[in-house]
Length: 346
Image (cartoon, rainbow, N blue to C red; front, top):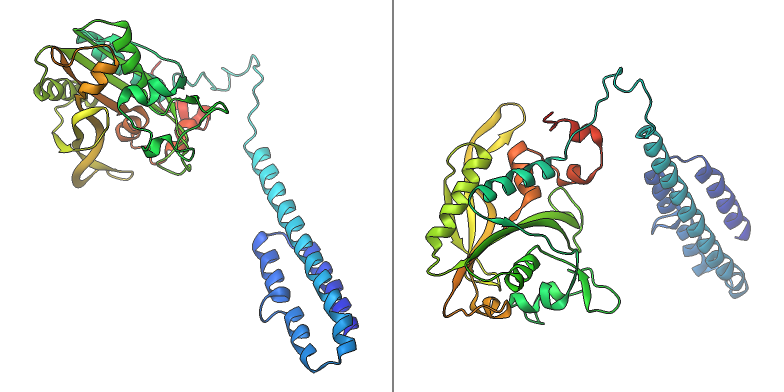
């Protein structure tokens, strides 16, 4: 019995060394340690063996299982490292600048599409009398949550949704709404401003989600502000961006810092890579907005009995993806100059 085990182990070591894919390694492991694997079959035959044989084979087989597991894990790690190194070698970028770069046609890639559309939107709002404000990436609990009427029980405060620092008092801002609070603290109504910037959330990265992305916040506070004012400015913005009148609709939406809150959708035709625009027309959720909650105005030092206003948040990454028919948000954060070069405007 021990000879069979030793022979099986030697055969396993010989086979695993020559494997080049993780799938093959896992298949080999299954053929030995699986329910119907060769080692399992040997152990099943122990039921007819003597007590002395069982005492000999049992410890050896357990030790062998552990050794096989280690060999499998080590091989899987080696294959993964080789794959990563091969990809890095293939995609290697030479960052050195030489005199022949322009001669080869490799010119500067230009501004990132998010930067381009951010500047475009800033110009649009400046033309409508808005100021452009900024705020820090590292925020405190007050500006990111408390002042925006987000209670302690809100899921955004959870570690799985927010990047907190060790003191649990500071965090990487989860939205540009923090600029609203700082704007209210520094200005006296009436006022209107936008605040673009980068935000951070504990997101699992895929084609439509990133842990770091860009937003643009807007706010207008004065006397007798209505939903009609909100719709006017949003339609004007979208018309300037898409160079045509855009059909919009408002749906009820819950956001702690506005009441009532809305989801603003635009009607659009889903891009078709082969035909340009497809025939399918539908609604795309684009822009959460609403009338500023009285508690938020109070937190900003503004009397809600005298003033009111609207606020909105725009995902710049999503807007870029819609405008240029980009299918994967990860392209925007790849750092690949070949991607940027497609959007070069000079």
